[in-house]
Image (cartoon, rainbow, N blue to C red; front, side, top):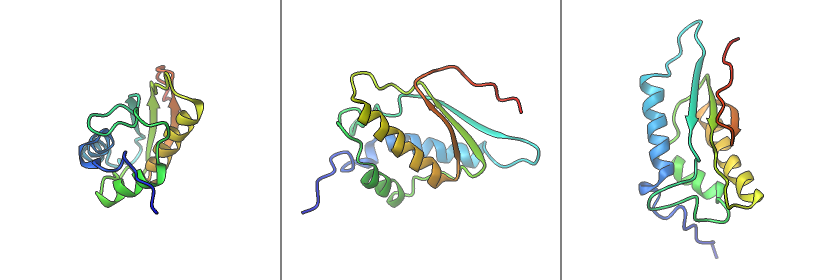
Length: 131
């Protein structure tokens, strides 16, 4: 019997979809490779709060099933050559395993997008982007 993935059931109305659609839009409109330039994307988000489907409501993010749904809905943005910094992750009232699982999901997502995830942090301090 296949385990039910309640997080995946209505992906079309999720935060994951909203974030990935925004990333797709940014990648096509703003984050185009320019010789001599470095593309950096800084996200300030808890990366878990949603509307209909909430990564916040689950004890464990089902990484594989959610990634498959994201791919099936063609929601992986083209972020090749982009350095991504995710700041302000909020793991309040969650077990350390949840944090690790959430990080694993977004690490895999950005890997599939072609981006380099430079930071995934609860801190909100923007790093120095100087070379």
